[in-house]
Each structure stands twice: as structure tokens, then as C-alpha cells.
Image (tube, one colour):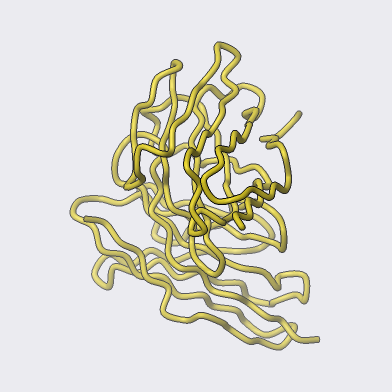
Length: 113
Length: 115
């Protein structure tokens, strides 16, 4: 069975500092990996995905993620965090065709001015 | 370009009642899936519809059922509501049910409270 773990419930960072949100996965085979962001009382917004190829994936709003197959990780990063990046972030994996995504438990990011 | 729209935004029901939630997919999308997001947790996959048929199902009881219409819109029905069904229900859409690389587009959800 596939699973996704986000080891940190919350990440606090000062505005302008680098932001990292951790994600590890457990699957058999080659995963398709996704990051989504959720603002209060809203649905999930797609940030970026890893399908194949370059291990560094660039996405929306200045976010990027690094796929590491040996460590089974897909950490989300942003070089300089903004207060407006404060939100709930979810890592997800899709193994089969179709719309079933398996999500991690989420990491709340708080960026302080 | 309209995104995924869901109705209603909020709903309060009593235990044992039945509820119907509605979803219109993003323009150009033909596949709809439903997720349940309990407070403080990640979304859990309920099921997916394509060509008006249920194609995949998560680990949810038969009390959860759905339907997809010819215009690709969808309904989620939950019977015999339990307190534990209280959650944010998210609808997501995409193009093609066999396309793994296509990201899902989510609606803002329906907040269901069961009392």
C-alpha cells in the first residue's frame, strides 16, 4: 500500500528566510508526486508535480521541490518565504491511473513578518 | 474559465438523515472525484466517476454513493449520517481518467456538520 508522511505538523519561519516542508513516501514502483496548498476555508490549489526527469521541479508562486529516490523524499522549498505563504501544505502521491491521490497529513506553515 | 464549483458551501444535518452534495467540474474536464477531509487531516479519497460510472473507490462504506451526469457534473450522497461524517467534502476534476500526470483541480468544498 502507498503512504505519504509529513513529519512536521507546523513549520515556523521568518519572512525572507528559506522555507522547507518535508515529505517522504512509501510506494512500490515509480510514483507521481504532487504538492498542494490550502488556505482557510478553501479547496486545495496545485503547486507542482514530479513525474519523471529532472529531480528539481519548479512550480507556482516561486516554490520548487526536490525528488530524491534513494531517500524516498519530495521536499517542498522556497528560497525566500512571504507572509502570504502561511497556509496548510499537503504532499500527495498517485500510483495508478485515475484520480486517487494519497495525501499526507499536512504541514501548517506560519511565516512571521 | 470557471473552476470547480461545489454547492452548498455549508450544511447542517442530524444523525440518520441523508445528504446530497453537488459539483460542477472545471470547463473541459470529464472526470470527477470526491474526497473527505476531516478536521486536521489530509483528504481521503472516496470515489471517482468517469463516463457516468464509478471507476475507483476508496475505503468508504456503501452509505457513500454518487452519480455523474451527461454534462460531467456529479453528486455525492451520504445516507444514515453519523457524527463522524462531519467533514469538508472536496470535489476534484481532471481530464481523462487514465492520465496519471494530470493534476487534480479542487473546488472550495462543502462543510458538512452532523449533529
